[in-house]
Length: 149
Image 1 (cartoon, rainbow, N blue to C red):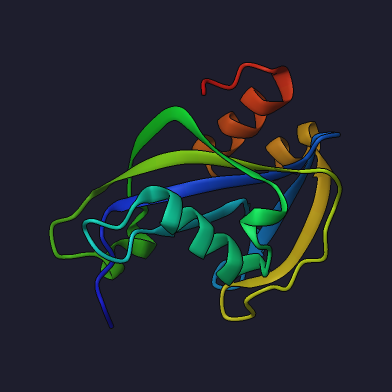
Image 2 (image 1 turned 120 degrees about the vertical axis):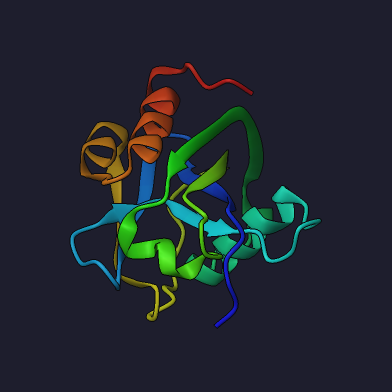
C-alpha cells in the first residue's frame, strides 16, 4: 500500500439551487461527506487533485461545471482509524477547499470501493448529515453566501 500524503482537497459539488451532493463512505457506513482526496505526489497541483478525485468518486467531469478554489485551508488531526494510511508519526492533515457549481443535478457513478450511496440534499440537510466539521462548515459557508474565494 502506498502511504498517503497529508495534503488533501475537499470538493463540495452543488447546483445553482444549492442542492449538495453527498457520498456515504463504504468503509464507514453512516459517514456522509463531499468528495475528498489526497494529493498523489508532492508537486501535484491542487486543481488536478480536485478534478481527479471528483472523476474517481462520482464520474463527474469538472468541465461540466465550474471548479472554484476557495481561500479556505483547514488543518485537522487525522482520525485514529485512518492514521495507518499515512507515514508513521503523521498526525495532522492540511485540507484545501474547492467547490463545483453545476447548472443542475447530474448522474453520479460511484466508486463502489469508496462509497455505498449518494444523495442530493438541500444545503441545510447536507450540512447536518456530514460527519466532518470542515465539510459541514464549507457547506454552511456556501449556503449562507459567505464563501471566501
